[in-house]
Length: 283
Ligand code: PDD
Image (cartoon, rainbow, N blue to C red):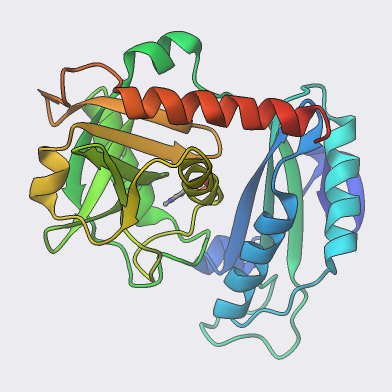
């Protein structure tokens, strides 16, 4: 397995960064996780557009053109042993004296690593997962895919401790997203999700799900969702690169709907799998 680090392709255990790297000292960096199915990157352009938005938000110049990113990602992906991968890509503000202010000279650290992509097993898709809710105590720039993930880490661990797959976050009584995923609900046959804002990550899977809802002509609406609506939803779904679309069938210990993945979920999940297959076959 090869990783890319600042111009070199090397084995993972030979990749080294400075302890003065601002990613390490301050969490001063951004990242992406890009799915690769059967060695074909999925929505790569969209991931690179979001990377640019994250870099702009933290005032870090993009060290590479899109063509350069694609070349590096493809080389790392081709060398990996697994056909399905999550390509982890991170850019930090690089090493410098420990000072909150940006260094005079910036040498960003660029790291690309393939990971096996563990999408949900069919049994999990069939039965759904449990989730818990928790207050969203993150900062107000959750649209930036920042490596400063401490609040997400703590939120995710709450669901691990509860034996569940995700922690769904509520800010001031409103649904935002999961600790590592976006959240959709279905009420009275209508798919609902919070609109993009500074309070959620603009998920690439979120966009795909909305496109599929449009194609399937399923009623859908982006609007704020109150905690109470989440708790009384007929269906709750999580979306993310590794989770794809996954039904939550128990929320805070209470069954969602009849406690099984619902009919709208089944349609969207099937459409997502079809769409993936088309991408894998080069469509
Ligand atoms: N996270 N919201 C949060 C907070 C996330 O961390 C993620 C994904 C998403 C979904 O985004 P996408 O559909 O583009 O994967 C939403 C990645 C997978 C991670 O941190 O590992």
